Structure formats: structure tokens, C-alpha cells
Image 1 (cartoon, rainbow, N blue to C red):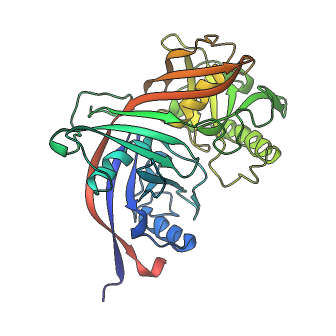
Image 2: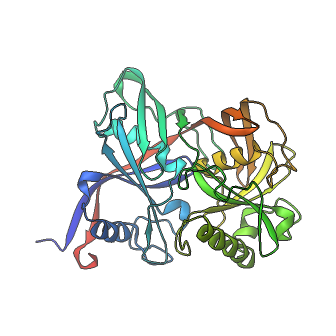
Length: 359
């Protein structure tokens, strides 16, 4: 008898992240047992993740779990897990809009949805946040098309465009756009905005943190004093708004904003202990909501309160563009819908093997 167990999976890149995608029914129902398997699959805890599929960076230590939905009007349920690299922690509080991009293609590949000739619409329920998303995947001859001419900054090769329409994104964890009731708060003498749209995010102005320019990814990722300063504020405000002790949780996320010569605003996104080499899709929606609201840390750099149009942010790898529809009531955001286009690629399909001794 083999001393390893094998689990069917597909290894995919979704947007600017990558990881294994599993059917929920192929993993244990018991959460503790499931998390042990996910840690073993990714090779955690080990800063190299040498004994698993993880890539030793947060954007490469992510997992998608997919299930055929029982909810009327929803095709599939999506569960996201962020696997800590050097600690035995699996965090399922946040979501990931990049890994989400691969959910539609995965559902088609696994026969979870009816495929149309030309393009197929898949309605996804994000079970981590409650968001509802429509994905439109190109399926000529009822087969997923991965090749295409859609480029996204942060990925070296183009792919087939996948359109994502995000609904129900306000208050993903706290049920409020501004969890504190304020658009601007202060802790430890540092001003910030805490916003919850697709993901809770603490946003700082660059100058508040002693930064002067739109620093590079490498400089910010290596600045542990900066990261610890933001993390201290993040942990304190999370307790105040009922998110509990988030010292070992990846939400709220953190971000820094500044002016941009090539986009509506420049931002650097943190996960939260490392700087993102590009930008999270969910993070871009939180940033959009902060920009579209008055008297936030973004207000110095952005003052366009139109109800629809494009929004472009500059990140370390280039630009990210999303389209929005915003409904205001008494100058406050009442509803917001976001559409973006990304791409995904199937890298491997087969089985991943896990040592029984690790379970």
C-alpha cells in the first residue's frame, strides 16, 4: 500500500496568481483534516515550500476549492484559501479575485456547468465573502479557449479574455462600506481609511508613512519596519470593528496610495506582510470605492465622482483597469458594480500526492 494519497487537481494561473484548484468533494469535509492536506499540498510550513506546489511567495501560495452550487441562479460555489508559507495556517476569511479568474474555466473543464458554443456564462458565488460574480469564458466548439491576445500587466504572455462582473461587493466581512463609520481614522498618529468593498482594506497615504515617491516593489517588500507599522494599525483597527485578532489573518489587507502620471491613482498593495508584485482584483475594488467616496486618504489624488466609467490604477507591474457603475444616495455610495477583464491558463491537470505521515 502506498504511503501517499493522491488527490485530483488542476494547477492554474488566474490573473497574476496561481495555485491548485480542487473539487470540494475530493477533499475532507472536516476543516482540520482539509487544512492539513492543503498545507501538505503547498509544502507549508517551509519558507521555500520545496516539498509542495507552493511558490514561496504569497501570490503562489493560494488554493481554490470549487463545488456545484445548490443555490438557485448560481452555477458554482468558490472557496478560497490563503496558505501561509512559513507557518501552519490556512486562512479562508479573505477572497482572491485573481484566483477567481480560473474558476469559470475550471468549472467547464470539470463538467460542472453546461457549455455553450462560442462563449459560456458562469455565475459564481464567492463563499468567503458572499459576492456574486458572472464570468464570461470563450468556448469555441464548447472547449475552453486559453490562447488569445488579452495582456494583463504582471503576466508575460497574453491569453483569452475572461470578463468578470462583480455584484454585492459592499461590506464583504463587516456589512458596512466604512466599518468604523468614518471615511478617515487615526491610530498611532497615522491617518488612514478602512473600507470594506470586496475585501476589507486599510489604506494609507504615502506621505503619512514617511515615503516620498511611488517606491518599487522590491524596496517596499524589503522594508519590514514599514510593513510592521502598517500591520500594527491593521491589527488595532480590526479589533475595534469586530474582526477579532487578525495577527495571523491576511485580512484586512493594507495599501499605500500616491499620485500617478499615467493612471487615476498609484497604489501599492500588501497581503499584508509582503508587497504584491502587481495588484489584487478585490483590492482594486476596495481602492475604487475609497476613491469614489469623499474625505478619504485618496481624496487628495482623485476627485472624479461620475457614476460610471473606467478606473485605472498604477501598480508595480504596470496598470490595472476596471469599469464601474456607482449609485450614490446623499453623496454616499449605496451600490457599486465592477467589471474587469483578465485571463487564466491551465498549467497542469492530474493528481497531487500527499504523504500520509503529514496528515
